[in-house]
Length: 387
Image (cartoon, rainbow, N blue to C red; front, side, top):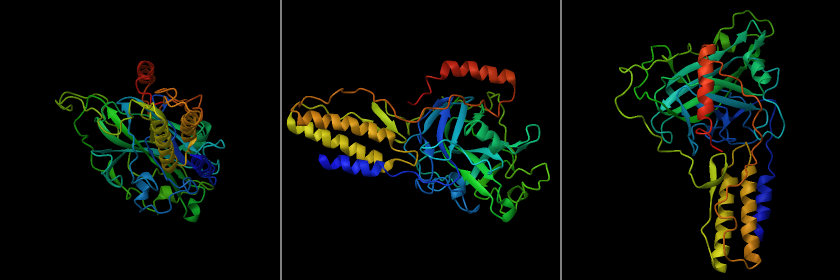
């Protein structure tokens, strides 16, 4: 077993290399972090993950580089709940920061319903824009500047009447610091979310509000060539208008079928620790020397899979799991062949600490509505937690 540790140390020592760009790393549901990288489609190359998208007609515009590939988990969230998206300069939070202050521009959040998260294409038709923010005249700030003020976090409400089922939620930033030179810089990624609500009828989206990504913007659109150093406001927001589904789901708009239940992409109940979209599960019990070493080998095998699948957000919890494997191996070497030690005990996550403050949804339509949502979230917060 001596070869395992040196291998894992070599893998874990690979650091994320970035420029002054950004990457969407973490999803929050009702103010609860779902874990770094969990349910998030992102560029899997640590040295390239924070780079902007270069071609507005590329399929990468949908969910970013590597975004065509689904991840193992789809996070559940209630219709009417709150989603927050965290952006980082360093994917693994090795250093603080969300985005360089020079990268001024607008933000948006798009969404697309898919039947099968594993096989349906992210690129293509049926995207709707749920929220946008450009230049705030009152505050004298671009959306990206407010994002920096909020430690890289932006929040929206899931519309109450959004149909239940699998959705891709796509936060987007557009940096305009080089737009006057023909280089608008898009940043995006996608969160896999299962929306749970009462509405199972499809949305009736008016013409012009449902778009294809790529195809929703062109390189010469005024919003992509805007000169932030000599601006003429108002800023022309790129893409379609924001679509606002009705908050009241009438009987006519609601299917008579029972509410959909998530069947795929669920976090297993027996996992001991999670690293992004990998989970460690307990090894088989044993009472013999052979069984002990087989369990040790199986544990290290899970660790190898964890390291191999770790996204740029890091492999901190792979190391936590590896320590469990070291404990099994040490017991075997000491002649303790009854185990595993601490069988079934949850391991403590080593993910970065979540932010102390998570901004309220920018899409909230009234103070009264926000108050109702806050009361509901206090009740639901634990129910939607994915440790």
